[in-house]
Length: 349
Image (cartoon, rainbow, N blue to C red; front, side, top):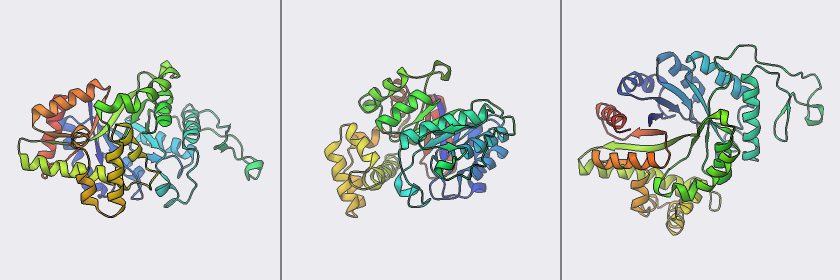
């Protein structure tokens, strides 16, 4: 398996990027740059491309609504050029809280919109004229949809480094997971539980794979996890508290009742009663109680926290479930220990 690491969108570009070369030397394969309602990820990715030599870089993720499909394609082509062919375009639907709340555009038809975005991006990278008139994407803009009638089909001026830049879809809903298996080079689920993955995702992956173009190759699966390799019980407990806090935020507070994709995922894993309790507590402002209410096997199952032997077993479980990249956030307090954790994880993977 490959080793990835997400970079927080809350830190400064120079501070976070300055240590990436050390992680490169430790065996890091890919750096993922998130984007919420923060500094944009593209600036950071460009900075990373200039400051690194071998590590792959990926957006993790850019939402499909706030940039036009052709701008997503142009951006990916530019970053792939700057990095010498090391870029992966990670996209996703995000959610209405960010898309409508921060960008002010409607959060509609994520599945169909994603499908059209993929088609337009690959048209751009092949340097074909973009002439796409779908239900959600209209390029050139037609008069019927508010255009002046002056738009003409255009193609990308520059020659991309690659005619098909790898694309990754962040998805956990069954329909979007099936779409990832059908159309994308890679899929990134949140809070991946190896023991529950077949129940939660198996049918959707099989459905999408049945429609997959063989030229895309096997689907890569990149999962987010949190990492601490230590024999110290106190360090393990502190790390697991961080895992619980993040899980509680997403399962309990990332969305409203009846519209929380992460809560739905916990239900599909078999934690329906617990997911409802966590959400009730979190939305009532009892965040610590919500974190404490999370099932212990769920918390430990999605993370890589413990002594080397335990982490080795969990790595094997992820591998057995089809994972190809462990996108790990090191939780150790000191940089040297975080770096060592990545080195150890690389040796286990």
